[in-house]
Length: 431
Ligand code: SPV
Ligand code: MG
Image (cartoon, rainbow, N blue to C red; front, top):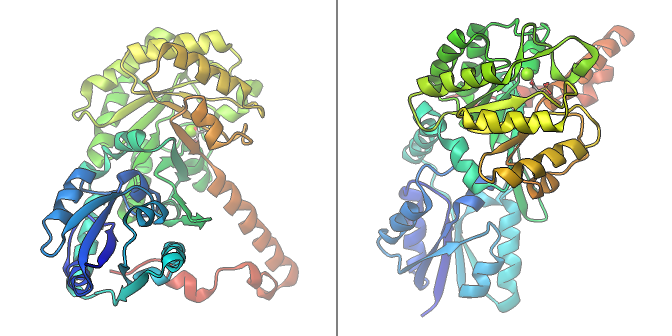
């Protein structure tokens, strides 16, 4: 009997999938592949239903004779294993980054004379509604909050992009790249205090109050589903920080990072050029413990950020603080540096990993930007935050446009660099 293979990357079986199975049955025995979570999160949305459950869900579809694991997005391994006579798929993969997968399948089938069957993708009101519901569910606080912890178990390093508005949230949510058949996207968002303040034309000194920062979170949450790490600056007074933890947790934020500074906080990238005071280990530990005590879920994370290298207090001080903060309950350590060379960050990671193999390490390579994700992973880092690059790329582009309009007394000269009007008005999906 001929073998017909299809791979589903879904949490919900709807009419469209059942159609594909029915069509597949006409050609032979139907084998369904279930994509591993690790592969699914690289180009699709985060699965609402875990891998085992998705596997059972496929087994329960009438007409499916066998369910197998597909480990990678590209079909090389699975086709070599199964050698199906046919691969069947909805025709919706002809456009966008998924085209690369289609081409991969076509070239593999060609090697031995297999065939691709494409079924018109069922896109009716019911399917659209199921899709929208899935997306909406992912955005809900109780689904979003715990996802950062899950990602830590699934990704070699969790890639996080700065956001400070609905629009930057959309960029972090939707940008997917594909080259050489490898897909990638950001897994989470960083609600940077620097960029949130800058977008409001304010200095990064804890001046933008929590109410305003929460409104920004809400703007981002309304249009995204990915988990959020909130830049909590110093966390403020302990008596205030506990309320911040409760609010963030209720909103569905996954983690807050607080830094061990007190008094007038200035941006770390100023380093010792401005007066900045580091908190005492005892007091900062008290703040961490107080936050951990009030949180209500096991999902929310409080990550302690160490400023010893920024303030030139030395590696030993940084390591001592890291151990103390973990003992006080911190769910992760962020180590920061403003050196161009990643040396001290990598040394910290290595030395911290000698005494603690579990606690996640967060790094922010704004200054030491030559370091690669691979190197950071090899030294034991778990989360990499690209903390301000969207703001820093948008600002010069806008400034140049303003200058050019003033220079030429019209807008024609800048037009080539602009997003077409039609694209901007259709950028945001309407309900
Ligand atoms: C931020 O993005 O606001 C940060 C990271 O705190 S840094 O600007 O490098 O201090
Ligand atoms: Mg900040």
